[in-house]
Length: 230
Image (cartoon, rainbow, N blue to C red; front, side):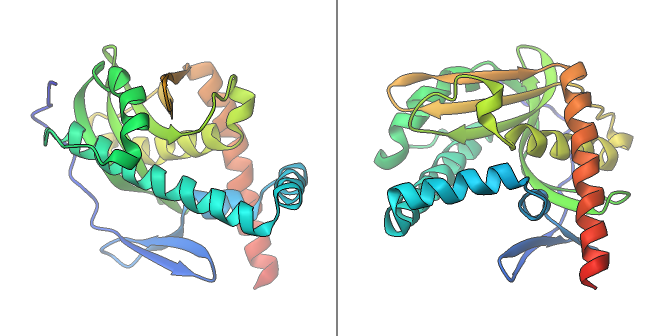
């Protein structure tokens, strides 16, 4: 793996949770809602109905078990990827080994790592988040996001709001790190799946622009609702 000699400076941000919502606070005291908080607050009714129908179908207890396990495996796999990208040659925990074996061939095509698990802020649109990685994939600078799943997604449509999340992180990274020559135009979303090669979703600039327009509308909707809520 090739590491860039000009790693981006990390933002000293603190994570805060309040009423189930997540915020990040920078070292100047700016406190902005996270990307996921904004997406959850402005989720279309069709997506809310789909989630409620799924919970009704499997039962509340089973739904909680599934989401808890998914969150745990995602966290473990992210930590494994982080250690690998930072050159720490980690030993993978057994629970996340199937996901690690799925995604590692993709990671071997990642180089020039600029940032791993870094907080970002978009001061104009007033949102924040924590992105997975800024690096080169097959020689192209991009923002990277790692996901885990038990079965293939099959298409971008089945990624639901993950592309919006990815695009939001890109916009914040481009704004915050502009003076460091960061102007990302491509995005990579990789889904690790047990006993299968990871799914690779590559986003070209034209598609990113469409998602960015959607994201701007969601942010505007969030702050309009906040003004109504007081």
